[in-house]
Image (cartoon, rainbow, N blue to C red; front, side, top):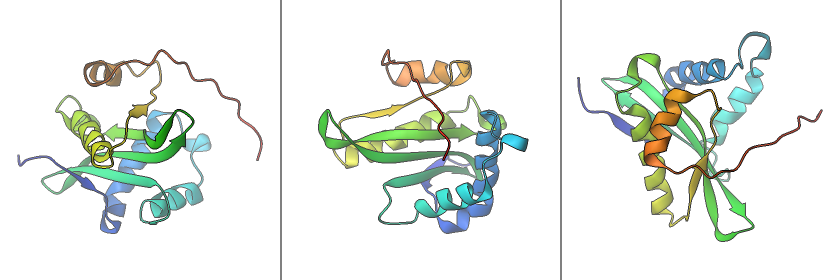
Length: 154
């Protein structure tokens, strides 16, 4: 097996990115009747390539196959003059879990933040995602914050 490469997604990656995106959404229960509308997926993909959007995609590739993805975005904060980097999505194919793909993707996000001199990277995960939390506990610290939300009708 060749070396794992983490790199920005390109438009040519779409057909290999889409199954990863679908797998990520299925993992979080967004499939079947609860699936994201196709226009959300299409808009998300386009945002990665829009220079006016602060949203980015990285993929992990090995031997021509995409094994994982991460999406992150930059946003302003009331507690810093510099933007924060929010790691919104992280997913690896089941066969690649435990092989360092997730860690490599997170470390690439750290490098993206460092290249911009950003003060922090943060993300959320579901409390049931114990596999991911074993990694996260090694590479970051828990903030102690809980997320509350209310879904509003559009």
